[in-house]
Amino acid sequence: MYKYDGFLFGNGMTLNLLSQLKTAIPLEKQYLIGIDDFLKSLIENKLSKREERQIFHLFYRKNDIENHKNFERLKDTVAQYYKAHDANIEYYLGVDLFQEDTCGYDYTLIKSIFPFLYNIWHELLIEYLYYLGLDKNIEIFMNTVNEYLNDKRYIFTTNFDRFADSLNPAHLHGKFVTPFKKCSDLVLKHIDESHFIYKCIWGWNGIGKLNFIDQYKKIIGYDNFFNFNFFYDSNAHVKHLLIYGIGFQISGYIEALSTVKPEYKKPTMGGVVDEHILIRLQGLQTQHQLEHITFTYYADSELQHLQELVELYGIKNVMYKKSSAFLFSIT
Image (cartoon, rainbow, N blue to C red; front, side, top):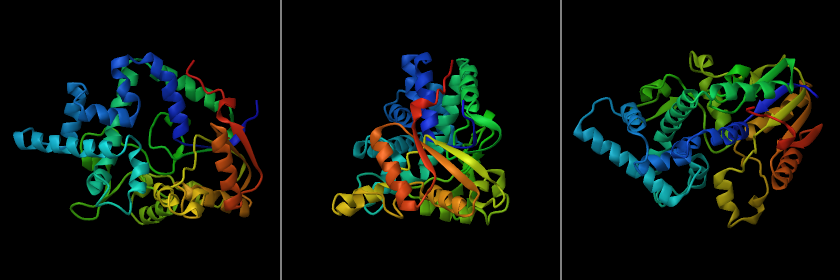
């Protein structure tokens, strides 16, 4: 088996893991598997009383009538979003970036509360998986991942989740906090009463994320929550980097533009969600710190997209493999 000395993974690896774990989860609790199903269950009052109580106390410290009304208003706000779009809040915030007033939901509020809901979802999910004893299967899965890596390796992830913590990855965009008892646990710095910087970076294009990274580096103690070595380490050298589970999706606002401007149907500079990763890959190769890259893909349409991106960003020495060629397994 070929072993890589560099590994960069994204949400596709988590989706693979959770799809395998799903069969071991009771049907009535499978809403925990995905953030969208979880939020839909919240607004439909289908969460357990304990789960709903934890979300309530995350946002409201005092258990009174007024805060219960506020909680129902919060649910209504999330429900408005799911009337406008069926899933993928991060993506559609990009789609609706220039139509906040006509998108059919409270754009600003969804944008501000989603990171908190995302983090509490992860906490409830991982807690339940461990309750079922599936932490052992998660460990097995990560051991199968580890088999493809050599002893002297660099591991990076764009994920916030902590499923792969046994691999000790560098979290390029931060990670979910634990324990997560109140909203302030996720806040790195307050800008003013209603604006703050989170302990995780999320957004709808790579340039925006790179700007965030530049901002975070100016905050004292940022390195307690982020590892930016991938972007700034001038001494690292990787012979062969495996990229798994990152589709480099087109930004939502670019896809919205493509309906009226066909030239945006193909990848465009400034229009890729994780463009900053691609720019850095090209830079690492220019600096002779990175020799070869293998991109994995799920479907043939994704392969074509990756090939277009590689050409657009001038990345060299590239190979492509189907994700299914890597036998990551919970058993």
